[in-house]
Image (cartoon, rainbow, N blue to C red; front, top):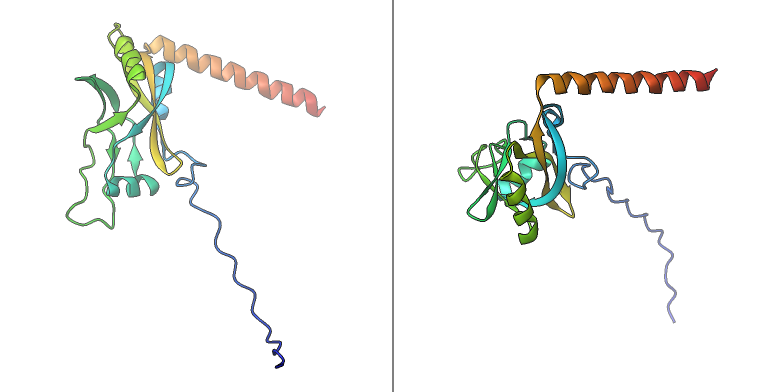
Length: 175
């Protein structure tokens, strides 16, 4: 019987377990902050979005902007119009157009709800967030009613009053 030599083995290096926070779904890829300022957000829906490969890579890189985007129900399908996804920097001649109209993927009953809501006067569809869930890009789209200037001022007053109240409570707890 031969004796096996005791050769010390090097411990294996640990793999990098930290993923990109946007790609792993910990952080939103894009947020439309102007939507909550310009609209009353009444009801929110999650929708998938049909993207090309270079668009997904650009969203992962954080090159998406929803500021001027809106949703539209047309011919029994839901579309995202005017959403800007910048070109992929390592792309080739098959790179995508930044302002391409993109199809949103929702269930038929949700589509019927959205169709009924958008036919009411003054309601529109506004995308509020673009994020990853289980490796797929999702859009949070809200049924919204436009705000007047006095609505915006009232909202701002309410926010500052709430902030001051929270600060007063925090100061009273310290003493």
